[in-house]
Structure formats: C-alpha cells, structure tokens
Length: 194
Image (cartoon, rainbow, N blue to C red; front, side, top):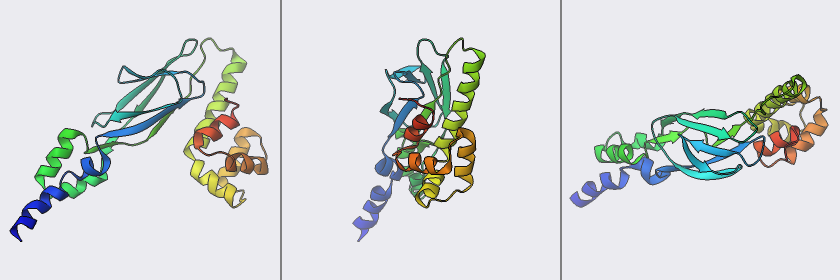
C-alpha cells in the first residue's frame, strides 16, 4: 500500500508536459501566398500557408512575415499557463518538471493570419486593402458564430454585419460559409484570395 502512495505523485506529476507536450503546432497564413515566416527572428517557414511545431515558452512569440514587394507584417502571440499544470500544485516534482520543460505554458492561439500590405499602394488600392482587411478580420474572429447562423439559415447579427461589410446578400453568405471548412478559407473566398 505504501508503494502506491509513493508512485501516485510521480504518475500525477508533470501533467502539462504529459498531456500537452512541450511543443505546440502553429499554423501560419496570409492574404498572399509564399510569405516567409520568422518566429523570434528565426526563419521557421519559407512559404505560407504552413504548420510547424514551436517550443512553448513563457514569453510572447513575435511573428514577422516577409515578402518582396510587401511591407513586413507583424503579430504577437501571448503565452498563458497551461490548464493541465494546475493539477501539479500538490506535487512540486510535477510543477518543476512542467516549468523547466515548457509544459507549463501554452500559446493563446494555434494560428496566425497576417494581412500583407503591398508597398507603394495608390489611394484606391489602399482603400480596397483596408476594406478587405476588415472583412478578413471579421470572418476570422467570428467564424463559429457565422457557421451557426448559416447552419440554421438565420440572419442574425453576425450575418447582417458581414453582409454590410461585403455587400453580399445573406443567402449568398450562408452558402459561402457552409462551403468553407475553415475561417481562413472563408476569409480567402470573401476577399478573392486564391
């Protein structure tokens, strides 16, 4: 019986590392293809879209996107405490393991989408770029709610707001949303990104 009580803390320890690992798969995409992605000044992807495993850390991840003819795009991805780590409060061994191995942390998002702005845009191009950026941002952040309204053919607040941004009627939007597997696919369809 004493052996069970000695082994139990070891089995329950390091929950963040055991259940989540020390890396996190991140996807990177943008409104133009073949963008190079740098994470904390290290090239991690030579062309978007791409997915890579990154080491989880306590610091903010700085993402830089580069492509000739475009201004550099920037995004910050914050880190937070991995929920599985809270199981280690009673076991200092597990907490220490998670802390040193990176299992204690988790990035707040699994994907990064960067709008690349062309250099030397004319005024009309800049206006269209800002409009497309708003449409992409709205569809990326509200995809789940848009899917729900499309599935029920409900013209709710999300569909109405997107219809106003895109000048498309709600029925056409419902069809586009239903045909989109991901939020990025919807963003690309709405702004004619191939």
